[in-house]
Length: 95
Image (cartoon, rainbow, N blue to C red):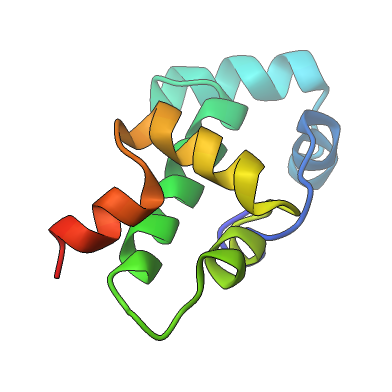
């Protein structure tokens, strides 16, 4: 998930890579990371997006696509939910 954040990861994909059942993978991941695999992925993607938003030359659409969102609106909603402010507000405040 770190090397391909744009991929449409599922819990099943991650469990297969880990050679574990989904239940075992989720339990072990949550035990180690203190969050579910999908919550970790979302947080990691939004932190990656936040870093990308610091660069003015990267469009919001490019940021959204690079972290696995096909639509700018869906990305903006997810970013605001996780980061507490809109992507553009984040961009403006980090200039």
